[in-house]
Image (cartoon, rainbow, N blue to C red; front, side):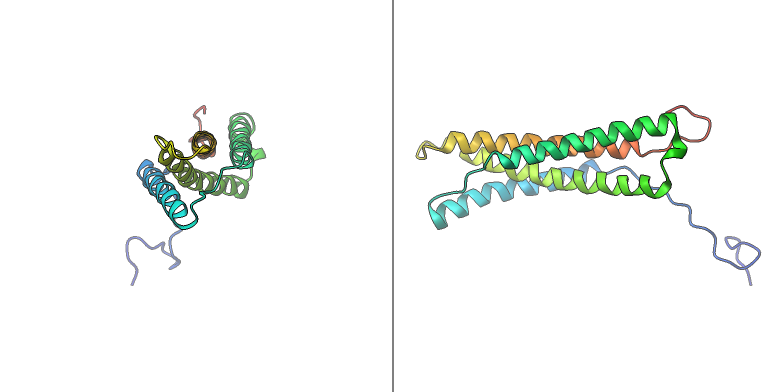
Length: 167
């Protein structure tokens, strides 16, 4: 007994893989969750320790470095696929796609946390370091957004155009 979907030799049909681009809704949900977490983090640490943590410059600079690496990888991948698609093996493309998605999701969460932490400092005049904390957290939040952009661009660069079409 063979169904119409099975090949005549009785083997399972080869699955046809299609990946959809990252969902903007998923990125937004992570960003909003991070925003709330950053706001709550400030409130909890202020209540528990009365000295909320500072954001050292290493954090935004590290995030900017990750964003630059992602953007460079996206540019390199796009150029490779456009000029010499055979140079990029399928497993390399999949690895880059996984990297792009993971970084975009983590970048959205990090951007939300840092922006939430920065916003929680607006209007606080009781702390002499409030402005510094808000500015550094905002810089880290912007770096997180750049990671999201880099992840989205790298994901887009991993798309292989249909045969016969230019990228």
